[in-house]
Image 1: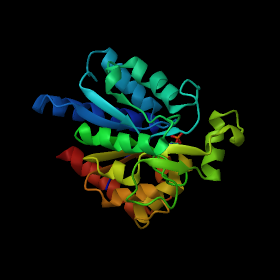
Image 2: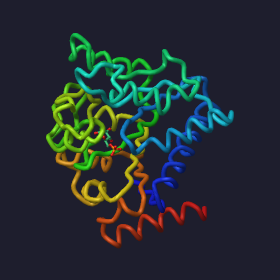
Image 3: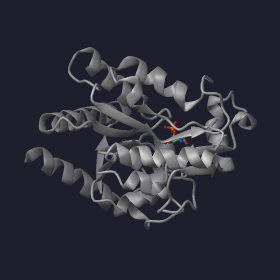
Amino acid sequence: MRVVIKNGSADGSIWAAHYIAEKIKAKAAKTSEPFVIGLCTGSTPIQTYAELARMVKAGELSFKNVISFNMDEYVGLPENHPESYHSFMHKYLFDLIDEPAENIHILNGNAPDLAAECAAYEQAIRNAGGIDLFLGGIGEDGHIAFNEPFSSLSSRTRVVTLTEDTRIVNSRFFGGDMNLVPKQALSVGVATVTDSEEVVILAFGPKKARALAAAIEGPASHYCTVSALQLHPAGTIVCDEAAVGEIKLNSYKYFKAVEEAEQNC
Ligand code: GLP
């Protein structure tokens, strides 16, 4: 696992955006096959999306040959609700870039048959040739997408029940009222994420420190589902100093030394 520690969320977000942009360009230089990206929501990726959008506007990057799959969506929340992940993605990314509408995939939390919707999503990812890079955030309990503690590390896209903790944390987007936060969501599984060629996780701020320490130094466990990254050959965590506040000093020094060595290569 690679852990890139930047001073703050602004540096980390810009680093991640440029990393993703380079990956998109590198594939385009090799093949006409589309770049397939997995995307996340939450406050964490907003600055990364802003930088990607800036690059598109400046003509430095294009999403014309990019296909995207979002991680999750609430069940039963209207698509046009301001806090739906559909609304979020359009506001912070899709309305600002040149990705063709037909390339955008977001789970439909209002589908009449949710199990069929999830199965079709997994099939659509396979049809696209699999995901090249999955960009994720983490919950304060270490969940990836909406894979709450005790989600199997082999899980696939499915209906999930949110923990009370997650509903309390996410209530800040619903006027502070956890009763307005849907109780269920559709989410890609842990294995849907780890099947990707590469996984990049963003984690900023002290609220993520406990989860990050568990993910980096704890065992790979269904209790902290982002820890599945330990089993992935190309997993990167991009974080800031505050988010690694709970890892051991020696772990911190090692990750810093690795990045320094990378820069000197
Ligand atoms: C939700 C999303 C996750 C996201 C998490 C963290 O639970 N389902 O994909 O990573 O929120 O959100 P934030 O970035 O706002 O801390």
